[in-house]
Image 1 (cartoon, rainbow, N blue to C red):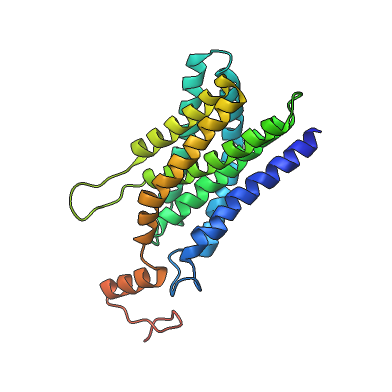
Image 2 (cartoon, one colour):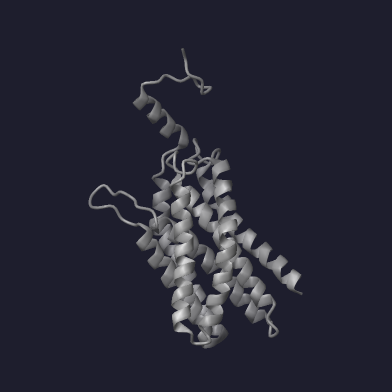
Length: 252
């Protein structure tokens, strides 16, 4: 039963998270657009890194879900801080590496990373629901709604964690903004089950809807502003005063 629960949880987590990367992030890759706005290989590596980073965070999520009903408020705060801080730290370190931070496509790698983290969190959440001795269709349905909320919250928080420059006024976003968005959403997800299955479903639905609206109105605009990879490279070549051939070789 445990193996079946883990298998089904993995299927749900991968379908939702990888499906997001394929559908939403894939909109910005050729041939959907004239020039890709990110390196597809780096995007897959970022997603895979998120899967590995999500393993210890999934254990913290399960501890968080068990601590709130028991009334351990201090532990809830600690687990929330670890969960949010771990995701933020992983994204921060990844985007400051030479490999992921050198081509100007960081926002795409950030959402890929956080989608991978969400995939493992979903696995843990669904597997726990299926392992419950009181498993019902309602329990499974609530877990699926919570899974959608986790994914939407993760990728939206990834964009809010990035500092973006605006034409007028100071830069907006940053790790603090991303942590607040993610932390508040996770708190609502944790609070919902205290009011039964209906409360858990309503809380998860609210988090999912709000996160999706925030993503569509604010986060997607950040992805739209990322320049195509080829355009960035051509600009760098112009700055360096180097003439390059269409095949990437330096003309002598």
